[in-house]
Each structure stands twice: as structure tokens, then as C-alpha cells.
Amino acid sequence: MSDSSRQPMRRDALANRERIIDTAEVYFRENGLDAPLQGLAAAAKVGAGTLYRNFASHADVIRALYDRYIEFFDDMGARALAEPTGWDGIELVLRECQDYLVEKGIVSEVMRRQAVNDPEYKPSQRWVGSMDTMVRRAIAEGSARDDLVAADLSAAAIMLGSVQPFAPDHRGWISQRMRALCLEGMRAHPHPSTPLPPLAEGFDGARDSIIKREP
Image (cartoon, rainbow, N blue to C red; front, side, top):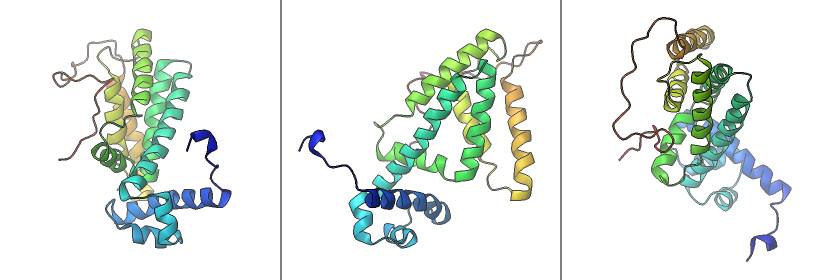
């Protein structure tokens, strides 16, 4: 059957699918990424048949979460590039990435699992390209240190998102301080800074992922 002959998803079916994805974020955060789909169906208040019509496997649910997160990163990357300066874009990326990773709680885990499930599926490279353009712009402006690369932003975002386990009463100020310290390390300074350690041999930040692919 051709794409043009396929019927659009009914409104109630689309609502069920979105409810399952919304529930999966909470369900997997509370129970781990390997929690059974039967429990997800119960949490989403849908039958097993409804769940499997939308997601034939556990990997399909992970892929749906991954695509949702990539959509956020794509939008954020576009907004960062639209900032008045490259440095403003870097600040936006670290701030919004940290907030998003802390709020969702499982973004990094989902990204790692998707890299294992399907190593060839890499829409995240669009975001890496945006970050590379922004970093080069900040370096040209003289606001970022000249050895900063896009992979540093990705790594910093994951690191900053790790403040999630702190008590809610302290998470806000800890997040702000850690982000400020991280930005200070990326900033160009009047006096020479200690050079960053070299990138891994053969690493291409526009091609390779820093997401660990577990055996």
C-alpha cells in the first residue's frame, strides 16, 4: 500500500499513543528501562492490544521516547543559533538541556539504550551540527576558548543533568552553580587557560557519538 493511500491515525488512536508515551516517561523513570510492557499498559490505562498496536516491542517504545527528546533538542538547537551571539547560544543550550534532563530524569538512559538498539539511527547528528556552528561562532567572537568543540557541550549537558538526584530544595541552586562553573571553563579569558586534554584519537565530533554503546 502506498503512503498516499494510508489513512491518517484516528484522533482517539493518536491520543492513546501519546498517553502511552507520556506514561512511559514516568513508568520507566520509576521502574527502570527494562520494566515490562504489561506494567506500562496498566499504568497508561490501556489494554495490551492497544499498546502492542502502537508499539510492537519494548524497543519501539524506547524509539518513541528518543524521537520525542530529539525533537526537543532540534528545536532548542534552532533557537540557540538564533541568539544574538554564539555565547548566548551556548548559555541557552546548557541551561535548557540541564532543566530538561533534570525534569525528565531518563533522557540520557534512553539515548544510550537507543544507541544500542539501533546504532545506525542517528537523527541526533542534526543537533551536533547546530552545536558545531554555534561553537565556531562563539570562538570567532572571542567569547569561547579556542579549543572548545561541540562534543564538549553534549558532555556538559549530560554532566549537568546528573544533579537530578539532589533534594528538590537544593537542586535549583546546585544546578545554577554547577552550570556557572561549567560555563566559566568554556569562556575565553584574558590570560592563557590551561589547555584542555586532547580529544580521543580519531574522534570526529560531527560524526561520532559520545553516548556509550554497552556490549
